[in-house]
Image (cartoon, each protein chain N blue to C red):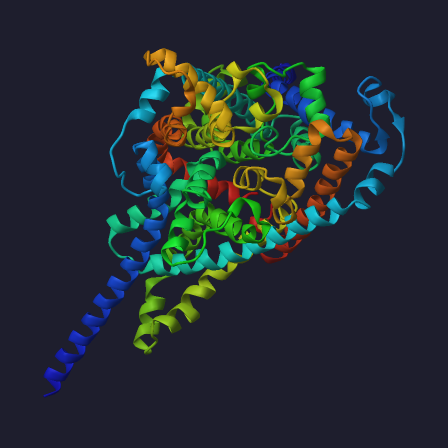
Length: 319
Length: 302
């Protein structure tokens, strides 16, 4: 009798567990739907027929599958290719220089024999708290003195260096480098030095190869911020050949005139003999542009999620 | 012998630090010094040093304008609301995520929710535009389906506190969620089992085991957020609203205001605004750091 009772009771618990499981998974599946849907819409609109969009609005599944928007975009891909080149160059060059500069500055600060250590740390901390901010050039608006410096004194406006130089060193990242370097065993450094290696040698031959985790994490953080930069183009660049992809995307979404001029050019490109460009599928083109400009990176970035989470973890605990 | 060796080492170390030091002098200390134009009638032809001192005139000009109150209020209120909403939602999600046992499902949910973190605000602007487009947008299609007239989202500022709050949560929530989830994983599972043996149901377990385990991290993250309360996320407020003027009453924050003033307004006055922002921000950081230090010195920034 009591045995059957236990069985019934256990069956009840198992049932309840299963119910809870189903509820929780349904909840998270619903949440993921809200995350995935917007992307599906963008893809769908870019593959839709312009007339369908005009008549029925944005749909989750294209009513008529149509690649016209992409033909238009590819017919005049020059602007996009240019945007890719500018973005890729400033991202790669900027990240390499920035990481090198910060790691080089951090190494002396991890060495107790460095006489100026506390002075330099103070110098960096003061910059961190009273300076125009860690993300001088990405994401946050420059202060007027920074703007005057970059545009009037250094004459970096309308040059690729406007992307690369102003945001090279982030004080917080230097501190993160220092923390990591300190964890590398002192004994290893000392034994290398007994063998006659100088500090420069130790840094490049021993410290850098041992610091791959922090190098990967911070490189990725810098890379991502630079790739997503629209602010620099917005503020310092007026030459249309020097703007980043993100800025191009913003312009395409905000100014239908800009897209129209691109579309009109593409008529000549694909040799369609039309008098006016007013029939260009502007609405669907906008989203096709978005897919081509943002798509490839969106596919690549999630593979680096590991570094990203780690970077934010360290960043949030210390700052 | 020993001392020349030390000098050589120190020289090499200094050499390594030099590029960064130069960078800081030029890009951090020079603009810091340049902030004096907040107290000057700055003119480009006279330069930073040559312009005339005018005391606090720029500040009084800014604070007597209606903008001062509006952008301060917006910046601070959004800061508070975002922190509260994100904290509560992230805690809830973390507690629920803890109940997900399948590793594959876990990985999937985390990746999906982390994904928007990689996006620029420009791309998020595209996504929100598919929802809010007054003619073709999905929201208006839904309203239409339920028999209500569609709305022109980009011309009524009343909707925007909602839109902005939801969008930033959508983009930012995964990270605090993962932090909280990690602290739940650190709890000894025996605590949950013991509670279960004592007859605790799911709500009681959450209330008496999970939430207390989360409290330290929650306090830490909230204090850090308070330190940043005077600094808004420019991309969110600029890209989503498409810089539409009619939305300013509820969407203009200090950062967007400074951005618009950068090239057009009086440079001295704009500098006064950023100086005001950074001084109050610094005080906030000092206060929050002081409290963090009291609670747990290990998490303090300095």
